[in-house]
Amino acid sequence: MAATDPADEISELSSKLDTIEAVLDPEAMRTEAVDLREQAADPALWEDQTRAQQVTRRLSYLEGEMSRLENLRQRLDDTRVLFELADDEHDQSARDEAAGDLARLRKEVDLLEIRTLLNGEYDNREALITINSQAGGADAEDFAGNLQRMYLRWAERHRYPAEVFDVSYGEAGIKSTTFAVKAPYAYGTLRGEQGTHRMVRISKYDNQGRRQTSFAGVDVMPVVEQTDHVEIPEDEIRVDVFRSSGPGGQGVNTTDSAVRITHLPTGIVVSCQNERSQIQNRASAMAVLQAKLLERRREQEAQELAALKGDGGRAWGSQIRNYVLYPYQMVKDQRTGYETSQAESVLDGEIDDFIDAEIRWLRRGENGTKQA
Image 1 (cartoon, one colour):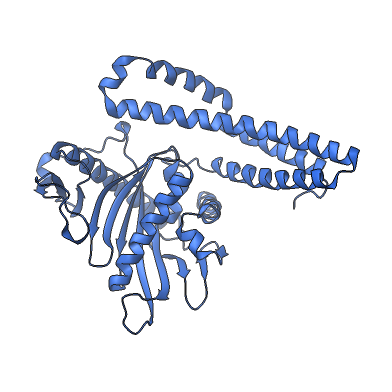
Image 2 (spheres, rainbow, N blue to C red):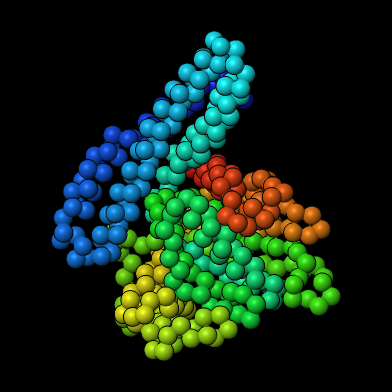
């Protein structure tokens, strides 16, 4: 429980920030940032655009995290002084302002504490997300589009770059889509979103305005890095090219630049049509295929471990969250129990509280497995 005395609570938050810094290691972050700045200043780096983007994204992330830690520490000190001045001058408005600052600081420190839990093998990776419409016809396609927008708005709110690789459109929305969130720890942050999402609302595709239940599946994978060694022999893939298209079949361009790759041993199919160049689309599609194969390998290893130790009933792929827009508004996570009546805000990307609850839930489950 939070301390009732502001001075005690500020001391408690300061101690928690000490613990967070011990885990995040700002000194190591500063050392890495210096090295990355030297790399970014070398003109030769930009001969490899992919590597250059990785360096600049990592540098931007480190600078943001260091600034965040310094800012929190300074604001704690400022809030302590503001309380002292308010008490000395018996200024209730100043005390109310300080109390508001303290509440915001408490939430920000709690959010930062979540980062210390992201220490899985791939948690520091960027995330690759695939959404597929499932049961529910036109409403399911519309819901899949809602989910894509939700995650892209979430990324935008956090100023995380995102790139859409492929969208397969249906009559009412999206059949499937694959996109990347290009920020460190995006995978560890979002991996709890994997599973089946359920929507209940009045169907805008039903002439009688009846309530409709629809489903969409979300897969979250870590982006592959060079150290992963996911080799794909050429004789194990089939590559097809086709013309890119948008909603309703509208042409994006007039050349056969889109690429579809089928991995013959597993039957996994990926495609990419966001680039004008067939070569670029093929490279992006191969990156998506490598990520899917890496995740498949990770899941097989996890299943083998679960068979030995038991998974506590925490299987992936089950229904994880309900979004209800009628006859009332509620979004509820089936695993953590977290819920809110602000359904429209959630669909507009305000999902941090759900993500935080998921990370803690997953962490408890992993600790339980390790102790089994």
